[in-house]
Amino acid sequence: MKSVPQLISPILDKAFRLAKRLDPYYRDTFDDLFKQPLVDFTQWSINLGRNNDKLNLAEERLLEDEKELTDAIISRMNQFLKKHYQDKQKTAERAGNTKTYGLVKASFEVLPDLAEDLRVGLFKEPRSYPAYIRFGGPGPLATPDIENNGILSIGVKLMGVPGEKLLDDEQQTVDFTGISCPTFTTPNIRENLKLQQNTYRDTGIWYFINPFDSHLRDAAMQGLFARSYANPLEQRYYSCVPYLFGEGRAIQYAISPVSSHRSNVPKQPSDDYLREAMVDTLSSQAVLFDFMVQFQTDPHRMPIENASVQWPEKLSPLIKLARIEIPAQNFNSPEQLAFARNLTYNPWHTLAEHRPLGNQNRARRHIYKETSKYRQKINAEPHIEPTGEEF
Image 1 (cartoon, rainbow, N blue to C red):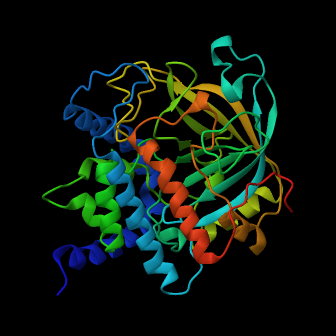
Image 2 (image 1 turned 180 degrees about the vertical axis):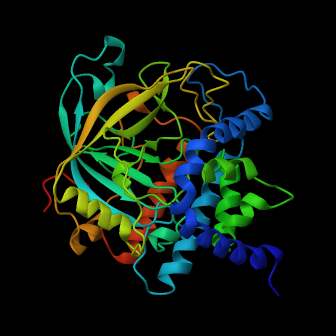
């Protein structure tokens, strides 16, 4: 006999997918009128219920059962991969940020004339690095683009970066990851484990609406930024979680398109219309993004250990440190899509000066590494540290 979550979740999921198909007809107007006030109200509500941990700037606080929670998340996510791919003899995709819209070549140029206090680690001197950028969908499964949950993802892998890295499976790379919402799906890894348990049972939506343990405010934040996007190359992406920036300073970062142009969702979108939009754009023009950082100035309003809280820009504006250029190119080959599965994006592929902070990031070090190893084992595909010279 099915449980209440198993009965309710498919109905709500179908309703949500229908709403996503209607989204292009009203969403621009809704966002113009209501999005920011609703974001402000949701964040006010989240902050209202938070205790002040009384931490210093860039200070972390480990959870007592952090290792056990991390191990449980890894186990559950790998069980998900086994259930949906290995047992069905299918090619395994990522358990999160699942669908690859495109893997493109790019360059990451550290800007000249940065202020002295910004010349830290990767940004110490102006130079350009080759990069592979993966644009992806939310997951946990690859679905028609118009029916996904509307949160896009980005993974930026820089190559040829000198210096000792925090993760030893790659020697010359630095990775940045982000999504199109400024807050993460879960505030911490204790709640993330609950989400993964529901995801495995195909009741992911129950995590948010469970009347005995609801996460409606987090659902509201995700919902306000989840929409039917027209082109992944036209969206801003947020780190959602903090990173060290030298000694005693913490940042979050954003990757924002330079152009303000916004396309329209096709009236009859194909299952892969987001990839097609990228193909069309990059067939004739380059695309530019700004890489910007936001410094933590208030340890409570801009927390390290709670990823549900948006760092207010009025407390700390974004500062541009680098420019990303994606040149015109043809990336839509099956071989290049397959190559994306050989790549492992992990925020711990970085220098000590940019060490990831917070429980979500500490867990990611192991979650991303172990689930990537398991996925590549299912596919009998090697983990490749790229150089940028691949063809």
